[in-house]
Amino acid sequence: MKKYISIRYVIPLVIVVPLVIATGTTAVLAFYSGRRAVESLISELSKKALNSIEKHVNTYLTAPQIVNKLNFITIENNLIDPTDFELLTRYFNDQVATINGLSHIYLGTENGEFIGIKRQGDGTRELILGNAETQGRRNRYQLDSSGQRVEAIGTLEDRYDPRVRPWYKEALKVGDLTWSPVYVFGSTLELGMSSVIPVRNLRGDTVGVLGIDLGLKDLSNFLRSLEISPRGMAFIIDRAGNVVASSTDEQPFLNENGENRRLPALESREPVIRDTLKNLLDTESSLMQIQEPIAISFSWQNQRQLVQVVPLQSNGLDWLIFVVIPEEDFMQLIYNNLRFTAIVGLGVMVVAVGLGAIASLWIVRPIDNLAQGAKAIKSNSFDPHSLKNTASRPDEMGELGQAFLEMADIVDAREKSLTEKLESLRDQQEQWRRTLHQNKDLNRDRFDELIERARQSRNNN
Image (cartoon, rainbow, N blue to C red):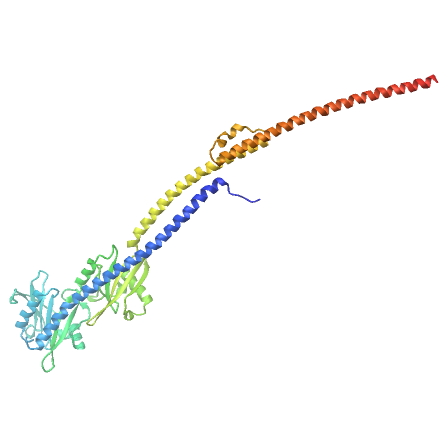
């Protein structure tokens, strides 16, 4: 026997199921559409941040290069004698005082001498001088606005020979304007690098190397100032995988046994920096192969991270700029919309279930009423008043109720007619039985009379 679902359940289901399907489909489509919009937005924000970083880095690197080239031309053309430290003091002092972005200009010579002008934290300037008289040490002098020595303010006790420093060697190796490798400045314990260029005399002999220090702390400060996203991150590494600058508070170098060394990104305490590079190396066999902007994504703490990488190459520098934005920073709006859709959908479904139940009662109640009436007719206990409400409805159910009452009247009339005919037949049957019984008694008396006559006839004979 087949099982059927009651109409009282079918009607609400017919209303609710399409609504659930429509709401769910709309929510799913809205989610994926919103996710694509978020990815597009993050991509645009990443590109905007990368462009800002590139422009800032190029601007940041331009001033030292231009000033160094200018100083090189000045000395090469004998406009300034590189051995005249008094003149160099005033010349370097004027440059540090007037040109933004310059904090330390110096010259190291082939004789092991050193002269430099450095801007202090309070804006004043000091002369750092090392020559034969200082016996390898560097004396520090406070300067006035004109570049004249005011007073001695100390001595750097380390035995300093510029000819063995990385910046000096790099300049001689390249032979032209370039950047030194990134290293930790001994005096400030700050990560930085130097714009350097070798200086030669008219005979072509190397006189020394001009240098301008550029600390990378300001670059990290700039990355921190970028408004990427609530948890967005930017960092720069070199092709060796060492951190140059980042928007985090982590120092870009490590101190081990009193020695400072560069911080490899894979050893960073910041898991996003570490995992970003790991995932990048899973898709790229080497950092050296990245010559065009690329985009990757990976999951960190069950949150999708979208990464844009852009190479930066300038005057010997070869860096990679990273911008990492968690998808969750912008998906929250999508999730809020989904929750709102779910709440509204749930409310609509509750209303739909209620309306479905009401519709079910509106339809099923008269049907139940008619079914009960049919059963009452079957059991000969039908009461026309039981269908009064149904028959009084102004819709199809009312018409059906009226037809049912008419049918009940016809059935009742036929039932009464059949009952009357049955009573008549029963009366006729009884009358026939009585007549038959009377005829039977008469025949028996006649028969007895004939027998008596026959007997008397025999006796007479």
